[in-house]
Amino acid sequence: MSNMTDLQFDIIKEQMLNLTGRDCFYKKKLEGIDVAGIENEEDFRTLPFTQKSDLRDAYPLGLMAVPEEEIVRIHSSSGTTGTPVIIPYTKKDIEDWAIQFARCYAMAGVTNLDRIHITPGYGLWTAGIGFQNGAERLGAMTIPMGPGNTDKQLRMMQDMKSTVLCATSSYALLLAEEIEKRGIGNRIFLKKGIIGSERWGEKMRKRIANELGVQLFDVYGLTEVYGPGIAISCEHEAGMHYWDDYVYIEIIDPKTGKNLPDGELGEIVITTLKKEGAPLIRYRTHDLSRIIPGECKCGSKYPRIDTIMGRTDDMVKVKGVNIFPSQIDSLLKDVEGASSEFQIMIDHMNGKDIMTIFVETTEGANKYEVENELAAAFKSKIGMTPIVKPVDLGDLPRSEKKSTRVFDNRY
Image (cartoon, rainbow, N blue to C red; front, side):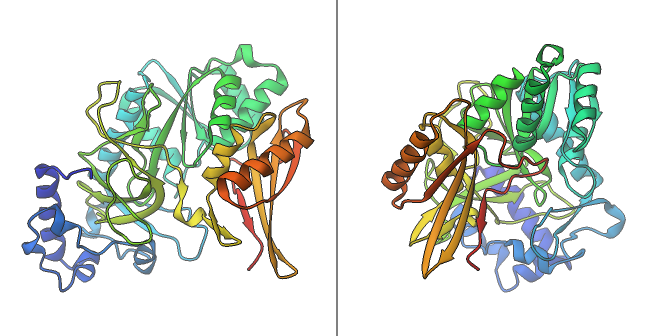
């Protein structure tokens, strides 16, 4: 288990005593629990989880844990379903977030001589402004493009000689394909890509890195916990270092809620250590990862979680088999001629579930072989046979935001 340090425990304990002593979300949430009697990590693990639904129920400002005059900004999760989640920030929260993101850039080898091209969205979404504040804290020149208008993006990228691209993996792929199509690779000066917000497979990663000629870094975060910037991969690409002076991370079995040993895949649960506006205790993120034990070759003392493997709510059940999109990523990397992009359609016809995978193939690939090989790999590794439909490169939609991989038409 990733053990809680004494310092982390003391911070969490003090925070809980503070929160239960004032009229706020956690006073109600922890009602009936003897917070003063929590004496160690074991006791801490008996506390109830905070769920996304709790945060929705607190809409609009029920999460606010300080007087309103201390709140300087709100952000909201891009929540695809129902009521959004509103997270209030104090001035210190904004500064702490910028400190964490500046650390991310530094770990990726970005300096104040870089020119950082930011394509994620600004506004209520935390992405654009998170990348921005971290870059300014680092002292680098930012090019705050926001999403869309690919022509303008590529023009600015050439004219401004951008060296760092910040994007979702889907948009980085779209830009890489456009640069190749237009034959302007020699006029692009990018060295690094800092890619956030969605799970992506090895094949997609290689394509983006090769086509853009950059080294890629995964950045992690979620609106409820600052936003992007709480963790990043280093040059060794061996998981993501997270800032354990700002967040305490547990990995649990999503079904039982029990803590898992280091190295085992489960759901990330986060407790914030310094957040003022909307602190969180044992927040279930639904992101799947594992704690990577041991020291990293880069020498950083910050602990690591693995790259995000998917989400507990990405899972679909077809013919009694649990399937995660990340499993398909790993199957694709061994199929000759298959590219990184895929979509899954699940339908219910004549009393049966039918799963179809559309997969893009590389130029000149034998589609018949891709079809048979992927179907066979799926059957042997996952335990059911889908219908495989190979399509041409670029046939599946690209997105500036997160790509939707699974369309479940059964309900």
